[in-house]
Image 1 (cartoon, rainbow, N blue to C red):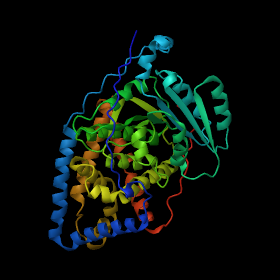
Image 2 (image 1 turned 45 degrees about the vertical axis):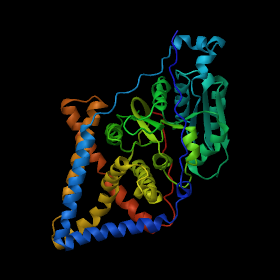
Image 3 (image 1 turned 90 degrees about the horizontal axis):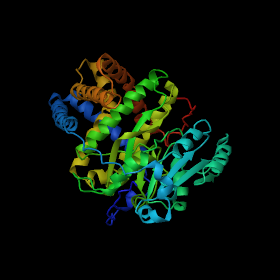
Image 4 (image 1 turned 180 degrees about the horizontal axis):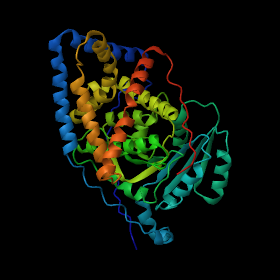
Length: 466
């Protein structure tokens, strides 16, 4: 008979979290405006004083060193999965196997759902196929004030899934997805929390492949693993240009996540398919209800708390990609604002290097390439148009686009298994698709400087088509 192989992770030491890490950030608009003024001022200085252009050359040189190391190192081999034999499921749950079951962590699957009747049955069906004893598995569906058939679907599902628990959240409760998760957290008893979006499909070997990562310490950093993120795949990949672009985006993100972890950089949570240790989450104050992206915010809190986030490319969790430019725009604006908010919120910890030197360097490299360069593109373009100067950001922009090309190419080759002309064609499509980030980031950073209220959350509509 197969046996589970599991060892408990070492208990966490006192994290010594500062007060600002557990409180809602203030004055984001003022901080966003200050950053924008500094960026525009620096670009203008480089145009006005030619010698200041050496700053760009120096910065590009440092980023070349970081990118070379990022693309050169090989990620660690994945750990073997927990041994599990589905044919002995009933046998493992007998009294004679009680001692083996007690060695396993209890896992709670949290499913926030608001008007998700089109996709929720598919997710629930996939969760019933998980290779994990139901005595150590909690399924929590959170009906967040749905006005469609979601409550009816959950009532029907409870009749055939005995370990499914449903929590009905009243309409109008604040906090969005974070608020829904925080309300259910005290009701769970699990050591590991798995968050799944309602449009996802979870493979049957998901838990036996991911849980072993919690039982080890990251070799390079010697820090405990506080969370695990798996690769996200697009279930409706062939619908149109937008979904094809999202396939390239997810593949490149998976490749980049692996490489960033390999250089002891920042592993990031992606919301769907993320597992978090309960003790770490509680010490971090739970999910932040004052942010648009709970996953990106929690990423920073975990790293500042002194734990690592591991990444696993296989198995992947499937989810629906948006199928129109309008839906993509709303979704990416939310991602951009939420991602930028965390830099404004946690800058004291970033500057104090609480994360460590390697993570701080990795963080700055991505902050410059993803946020500062799009901001700086506007004043640089205005100087070029109205004065005839050459672009001062050309070395940095060329470097970032070159790196993006390599990451797309390698991601599509390794993750999607593309080769030859098809690989080059999808890499080119991915590059064109990724250009949407520039207007998204430019508009988002400008809006955050002048608009007092945060971006209104627009729900991504899921159709349930694969």
